[in-house]
Image 1 (cartoon, rainbow, N blue to C red):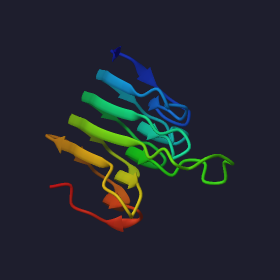
Image 2: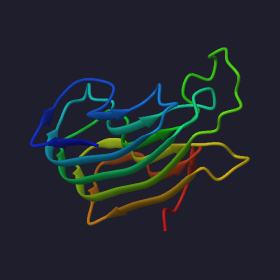
Image 3: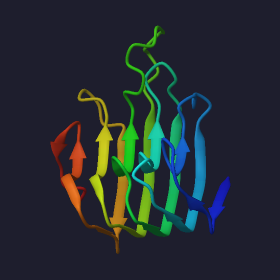
Length: 151
């Protein structure tokens, strides 16, 4: 259980990041009332793991976050992180119950970008509401590089 509240984030790989070594799982992240803004901030919320590490990542709650700009995505879920890692690839991760409410971004390449596996459904219950992604350059919602609808 982690609470991130009333923070200002600038440069880095993500404003708030879960992973990549997450084999033991992760649950209950609350992010609220934060400001993020930088062309050198890659992502606002980043979840990253792969099938070497497995684990269940669940219950990520993000609300009332204002973003001037970020370099890549407001929400990036990457289950194919570090694809060249040498390991046993038998541990498929699961990401579920990710909620963004009143998250507003003025400039990014993507709104929500999910890189997941084509052969299984292991990303579920992603909800974005009362949010706006303005100035999106390449796509508001992408799944494995293709336009998607989160409904």
